[in-house]
Amino acid sequence: MKNKSILAFLLLALSFMACKDDKLAPVASNSIKPTAVTEALPHDTDDPSIWIHPTDAAKSIIVGTDKDTDGGLYAFDLNGKILKKSIPLKRPNNVDIAYGLVIDGKKVDIAVTTERESNRIRVFSLPDLEPIDNGGISVFEGEDLRDPMGVALYTRPTDGKIFAIVGRKTGPSGSYLYQYELFGNGKFAVGKVVRKFGAYSGKKEIEAIAVDNELGTILYCDEQFGIRKYKADPALNDNKELAFFGQKDFKADHEGIAIYKKTDSTGYILVSNQQANTFMVYPREGVNGNPNSYKLLAEVPTSTIECDGADVTSVNLGGKYKNGLFVAMSNGMTFHYYAWDLIQKRIDEAKK
Image (cartoon, rainbow, N blue to C red; front, top):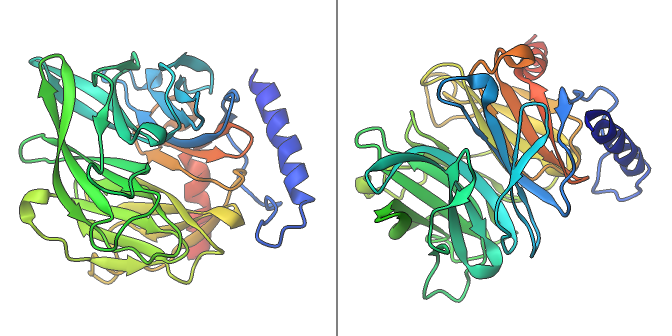
């Protein structure tokens, strides 16, 4: 099945290389080749997230969305094999993972996805991928503009509380994003809105959101405009924008964001340059001692086509992934896995 998936990718890549759309770049001849490609999903992949197994990292899984009216979440092993599909969902878009939500007195690892056609976020236990939300948590209630798309989870280090930051197809600048505290109510996960924030250019949409738990920050892509940064803790009552970067680095859409953590405070921010089929790499810690100043370090061409979403871990997953795994969505209904060393090599070459 792995060979069939890689063959399907190569055929699709060749078809796109022949495309005459001036907004779409071909897969570069020097692009990084995938270490593995997942089995294809039925409809339209969009966003992945990595769950780390608590006792055996080699048993970690990738959870990805299949974006359709009859879509769902899928769990893959580290070879790209489908392990399980969730219950059917009405157009799930993005997904993120957090550890230790207290439900009925027990800590449960969770995957949270937006369900666009129901205006809800859905909560699933991991690794069994079972729903624990009693049908979902309604979002953007009372708003005319709802249609949830992006989601990222923040775990506050001081008390372990978990929050979902949710974006939508469109909305007002200043309160485009809603932040929900997640908690248990009996056997189910529920949520309450605790914050509304986020500048928006009005150019396209805000879909890609990432949270840096250790640094306490939120990054999100204001597509075709730039990457914005805010504090993550709603208790700070601070909605001031901390940084705005990447305005001139992208061909068109700023898309999926992944944060590679070398230490608690250093590493890389990788953002999909969607129409160029590359990832732009920025220093997680900023430059020249300024944590809110971001200089482009490298542009890494990958095998992914028009990538919407990505995730990365620096955890040793064994085998080819001893220094971590980078996973990214690609057209063709698949996700591509890359051993982190492949990405690091390109970053190091760009620094020379």
